[in-house]
Length: 553
Image 1 (cartoon, rainbow, N blue to C red):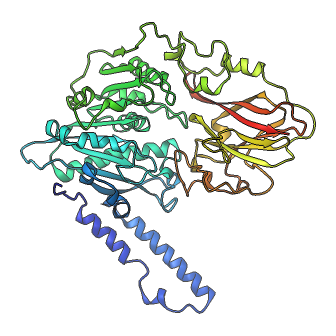
Image 2: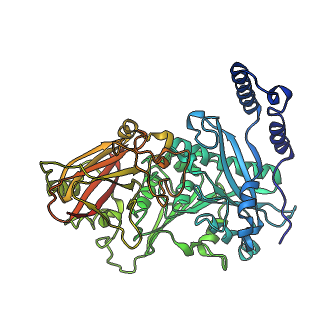
């Protein structure tokens, strides 16, 4: 294994150590406390001291990520062992801060860095492989970050020696779109710090790439640090945040020098291919010329876009890019369909999966450039054919919990479901209380904040329902979720996020509460749900789900 050079600045470590040794270690605070007044005064003094010390620190602070290193370093092998472990603390608006001590104004992210063999006579490019929300700062176990190993492999480093950077961001960091952009902005600040420390980073050859979530972050990094990057390689990504519906600053990207290569599969069930066309066409309209797009037959993410065994065409492309040198004179689109007559008519994207077969739903003519309207004719068909509410007693039985993730239409699930039995059986008269996920923490878990952003509509497809309501209380008594249930967005548990709170009465969760009739007709409950959010300029984010239970009488 090559000898690794440590990036942590001695000054930063001294700052951290001085703050640790200077906290509350004196006779007054360790002496016996005899009165309540003295105890309160001591606690107040300690709190004020801690706040003052925190304020006095100069951010950002870079330090070794010893916590994750101790926990996970022994599980890594091969090239992963050559990546150093780091933590990055920075100042953030306390209103956005939900990481660590919530509201203390200190944001935290983690990163791993591969340093190429030292050669003072040349400069090296740097490639940031983005993605890794909430995962431990461990490359080998991270679906997104392990692609960084391809760029650090012996094959890649022999042909294109480079710094390789992987980021991990706590779940709590992305509590709203503005907070997420603050963290993504820090990716660029980390890159600049690396350049300052080593002195041989080629700032004309800074690249970002990623799959799915990491591809979205690549768009966002280009939007918040438009002067930093030479190129981004987008592998199955979207410029529209699929949880909140915000679109990053596309004008900033269009006005920048960054070269763009978009890769997307037309059978992508998670980020539909129209998101690739949306970004490509938007940037083209805004005047972007130096970009390429390949639409292939793959599904979600092109796993062979990069490789540790050989330099793929896409890897070769990104390392050939330099700032202020355009990769194309005009936007280039290549559609590699196995069937030359392919027209998206058989495209099985998530909306087709969750909705009943409705004539004309998979629109062959315009799906590639589909933009969701507020009034969707297909949804009107669903509403027109929906089952009317029934009269009589309903919602008098048990409350059965499930969850919907707004941004992932196939991720509707139920607390008592198993892999073998994904459809849960309930009894006539029971209540289905479905947690609405996909917006988290400080962004607004309460019904009022949620309703400012989202419109929700529903239609009963099968079964006898007496009432459906949007509420922040699932039941009149607390219900404990099974230990096997994970509510945090993308994984968990997210302990600073009220979506993880097991108390269904805390008022900080949003539910779609479906009351079934005691006199239930049939043996299936099926309810279609549509979430929409206005993006402006006539565009809407829209997500579709179907809640389904077997009903026993």
